[in-house]
Length: 82
Picture 1 (cartoon, rainbow, N blue to C red):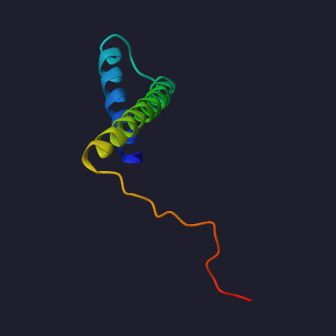
Picture 2: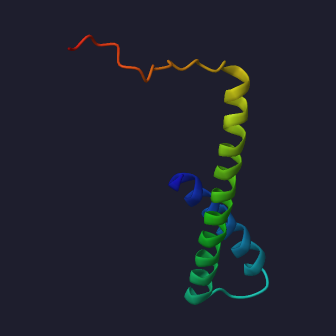
């Protein structure tokens, strides 16, 4: 998950810096603000992707695996103690 988030943040940062770099000169504060925003956005996107994966995973699992029957334990004690 961390690798996915880091790669996504880097892609977002690169794209924004390229677009804005054409119009203005970039300072350190400018780059830091872009990286911070990109990390926040990447975190939210990864969280949403994981939710979707979890949401789809049980549906697929239920379709492929039959339910197992549970053992029923009798509440009556069958031991022969006097």
